[in-house]
Amino acid sequence: MNLAPEKNPIRLALVDDSEVVRAGLRALLGTDARVKIVGEAGTAATGIELCARVQPEIALLDIRLPDGPGFDVCRAILQK
Image 1 (tube, rainbow, N blue to C red):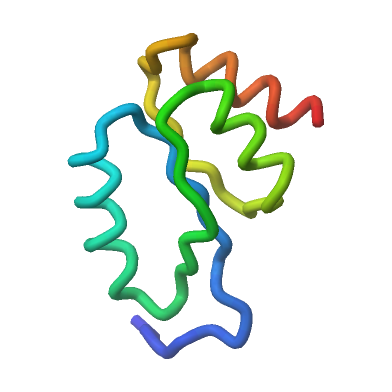
Image 2: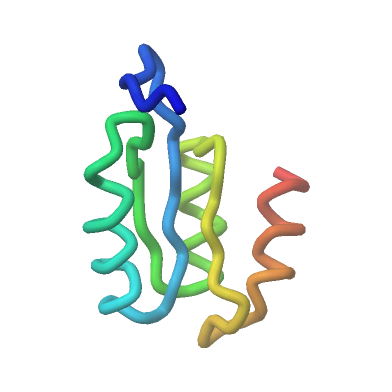
């Protein structure tokens, strides 16, 4: 497997209401030069706003957020 850094790393947004989970994902994924974490959010509303603003290639979404399910966040992001 080739683990060489990419010229253009994958732009990733983290959306999870748990700061501990986001910190763990940030620590794990932040060590890979092929991934660039472009933002984090703790609610559905801020996750939708974040993704509209930073345009990540991948959004890693929690299924249960305090203001709505991650499935709805995914639909809203795709509509924008």
